[in-house]
Length: 160
Image (cartoon, rainbow, N blue to C red):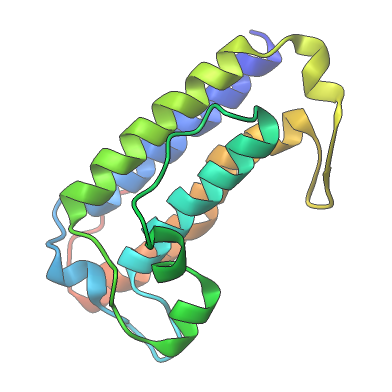
């Protein structure tokens, strides 16, 4: 197994876990805030999509698909603090965008030369392009734990 295989596995595992947490949630349930100050899953999914697009463009410029107009603003930290849900999408729309973006991420990683992984990324939390590529999947894993809090608040079954 080579480094890009490990990175791709992290992305695939992130997808699997996220999909397990989301598979039985409705559009309305994506808007639930289980505790004050916690962002709803809809915001988190949008944040993950926007962040992945941004990281992918830093990793391999021009490889990420465009997002709908207003998407980034609706899923910004400022929007989260405001507490509204304006600009949020339906679950199926997030899934479609996420699949397109993840396919682009996997293709970009597949196309990377091993030497590129050691190049500096210019980002403190992921100092090399390899670390940045791996962060695409790790970031999802950071957020899905918050999905579990929503599932518990909704009395949904434990899935993982």
